[in-house]
Length: 307
Image (cartoon, rainbow, N blue to C red; front, top):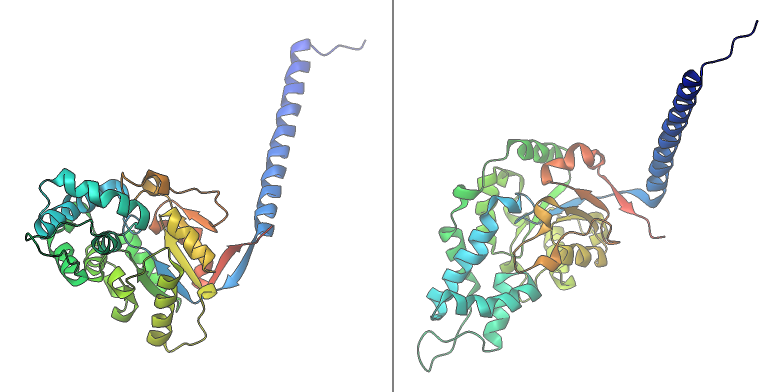
C-alpha cells in the first residue's frame, strides 16, 4: 500500500528547493556582476602614483582638518591681515575656499581682488606663500591629531618595492605637507623632488589642468623619464572636484571615501560620489590599497572603460 508524503514534508522539501534555487541564482548574479565589472574595466600599465595628503592619507574624522582649516588658517588671517574677529576672517575665506579648495589659492585670489584688509591703514594687503607655508608647518598641532600608521607604512613599502614612482601633490604648502607625511611615518617614501605643494604650482592648484601638467613636467625631470604622460599616472584623492579634474586630465583615479570624503564642513558638496564616471576605483582608507589594488605591484591599474 502506497503511503502519501505528509504535507509538512512536502512544504519543507519545496522550501529547500526554493532556497537552493535562490542560492544558485545569487551565485550566478554575483558571477555575472564580476564579469560585467571586468568588462567595464581594463588593466593598463602605469608608472606613477600621485597621492593627495590631507583627508586622504589620514582620516578626516581624526579632527585635524577642523583644527587646520577652522583653527590655524583663521588665526593666520587674523594675525597677518588684522581681521577684527575670527568670524570676519572666516566670512572672507569660506567662499574662496569653496571655489578653490586651497587656502593658499584662496588667499592669493582674495588678495588680488582686494578682499583682504591691509594690516596698516593706507597700506596694501600682500599674500606671501612662503610665509603661509612656514606658519602652517610650525603652528599646526600635528601629533595631537595624526598618529603613526604602521599598516600604511607597510603598504608604501610594498609600492616602493614595485618600482613605481611615488608622488605627493597637495593644495596645501609643501613644507606643511612634508610634516604630515613625517608624522604618519611615510615621508621616506617620497623623494624631495617628488613632493609637491601648492607653492610649487601657484597660481594654479588642483583640479586645474595646468597644475597637473606642472607636476608631470617636474616628475619627468626628477625621474629622467620623458615618456611619462598623465595617462601613466594614478591619482589618489578624497575630493570629488579633484578626482574629476584628474580624470579629465587623463589620469587613473582612486576615490578615498573615509569620513565622507570631506575636506571641510564648508565643502559638503565635495563629498565622495562612488558611482561618479570619473572614479575608476574606490577604497575606504589609503591602507586598503592592499589587497584591493594588488595589481599595482605589477605596475597595472584597472581603468574604467568608457561605455
